[in-house]
Image 1: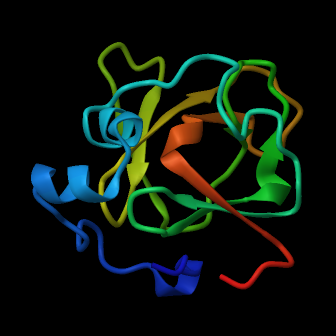
Image 2 (image 1 turned 90 degrees about the vertical axis):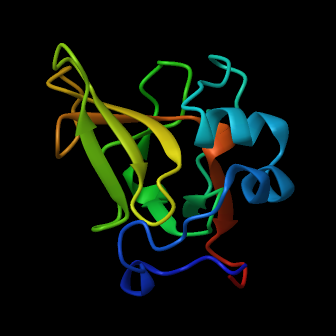
Length: 144
């Protein structure tokens, strides 16, 4: 499936599948993280140290989530972004209020968490800490 542009983001939750259908299209690790709200290993993800120009999309449904221009090196061990493509993610507060869970607005796949007020010198003072396995990357020069 081709990656969607921000303007082509379907209505929230419009890309629903049963677990068996997800298992057929996702790797076991992608299923564990995207569907069961797991976390990939710190510092081991494919995109943690990648800073090439392009777009990061949901590994579950292909929705464009983040532009590389919002990615920064937070030192946390996971890909970090200071903002998402408008309308691409949902944020849900977790108990305790320290962080917000982030999910794909289209397929509800678990992406990671947002932390606010950590003092990073970014325009939003937010860190979207995203599991690499939840993402696919398309370089700026590739056809999507």
